[in-house]
Length: 279
Image (cartoon, rainbow, N blue to C red; front, side):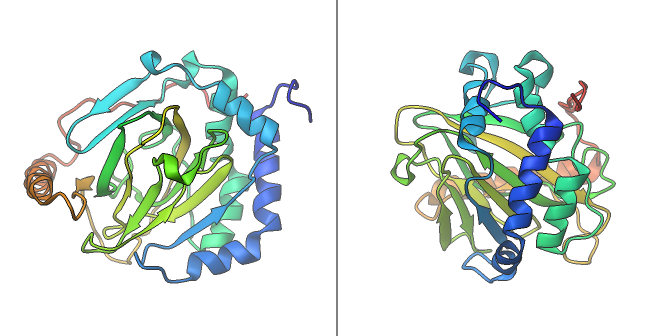
């Protein structure tokens, strides 16, 4: 496959399956291994041929065509308007949701009956530039209809020559949000990370020029991650060196949690993808 050849969803899916299968045993062991954060995670590099990964990066829309999320919680560009983008972006997103890829990931994580996120309630693409960040948080517990539990995040990074010292790296925290482990957002790297009521994670501040680009996918299951019925919103904390922001984040989280308990489906209009997912 050359860099000039159109790359379909099916082709991308087959390449991802082959890579996951070739590393299945070591990924399974890595995911089961305890870490500082207690959040189970597996990391795989060189997921796709580099020329294809670069094409995905180059197909990202410019910042002005994405939505800027800007608050004390986060600052980043996001989009799920895939129907307006180069089809390669849509194929890259939904390749990770193909049944074949989900089956390989299930073998790595031992998580049962997972499904993808075809409406992109949680997924899509993101770009972060200098000064952007995402503070420590746990993800909301359910899908858009609150029928399935969110159980896995799949984060695929596509910025060529991105270095750890540039920032924009994934961080996994312990439950108290005091200790962390850092996973650099390197080019052509996939992170498979569990998500539950204690899996605090963040992205540290981008310190370099350029764009840290990511393709994000989330898997859901009918079974709670800890075997118990839970419900929570995306709840932010702050970094240990930000005590005032931590107080603000905690108060903000409790207020938003109360609203969601009273109105389970929330007040805002859901931003969902309505286009096609296939070729």
